[in-house]
Image (cartoon, rainbow, N blue to C red):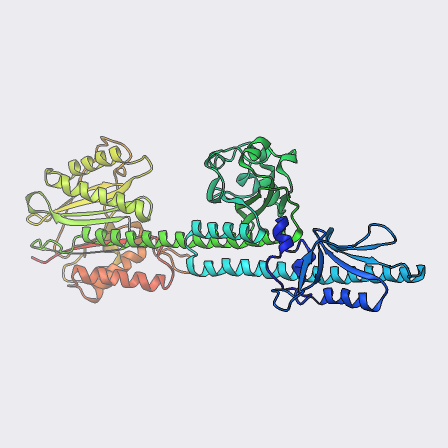
Length: 576
């Protein structure tokens, strides 16, 4: 006798009992049967071994028999006359019995000894069978978990296939007939969100089922009143019900009867203390589930929960990669929308640059020829960041370009774009805007502010000499941001530019940039950086001034992360 043996024996096959229900399931080389025969020889008593069906186990009659033992109907075993019966117990279940016939010549003292021998044989046999049964359970559990783990390693991104395999595995190793695995809503937090105390599970999704009818699966009626079964397993219990028709918690026993379901075993799918779902398996017959059965289902449920969580993570990563790809494509489109070749206007030198804090930016700048051959300069800042801001920025730029072709004044241009944005956006979606136009013939700058940071103007007090900080001023601020109030009247302002003047338009991401000491770069440092470039090289072009501003900004910020888009336009009026 040991932990291995034939998979199915005749007695178990006749009774339909699971393996381990009879002593014959634990016999291998027939040593215990030969021991009974040897005791017959050396004692006046006769020893019989009966299996769980009452059949007698005896040595095989021929060496060609497949097993060294066989079973037959019991012969010549009297019911009374001092016959000793010692049951072999596996847990609380009898899997066989030793029967000892003392014989007529056995004294009462020896009869007592024979009883001790019979009981010791039964006890030792039960001990070996218990160890073998536990070992088989462990092996069965390890095999099941190994098969499930192998699936995780090869197909961890297919939730339905994993769950169906886990369900089929559960039915196979537990010897059950039907089952399902249901998942709770992915955002469910805690037991009461996953399994509320209602007589409905409409929000539950069945992801795997075997041998259950469509009527059973399509019904939103839970198995238990108030879904108490689900809540019990989510609290850490493994629910084992021998007979569903006899349990008062079952909501509609007639449903179980119509479906042909009697016994029920259920365990939770939990991952990091969050409820994922429940595995439910059923038997067609009444069955008392062992502790090993419950532990095995719980282990499979834990592995399935890991599989679901891993698969969801992979799916999330896949969606994020796809989103990242879409963002990269959108970023490329946005970069193409920025002017690649700046217009060449006689007497004017212009440079521009925009550095988004993310792949998609909400800052806007554009330079193009406007009415009468003037240079139009546009700079703006859309509320928010990322994809929403980028889409809104694209709409504003498209509106500006479209209306610029049919508008001859800046105030009308800004008003029309404002009306478009008010019509097509939400109240909390708005844009600051500054639009300027320079007539190259007269050098008059006409500008229309709409709530944007006013550009700074550097005008040297004496021609031919570098400017100082006293030569820096800001243009007038004014106007309401666009996208708030339709039909808002916008006004323009004018200023005469002179040769050598430098205009710097910027977004607040430039002045609001911070270093690791949380200090803002600010307007003063922006002005200092522009003046520094012109001091070092009085005839510096717009690109050189812009580069010096950005270099000064980077030195101040250091490795501190960029938190907002940074956009600059620099215009220099060339000497006559």
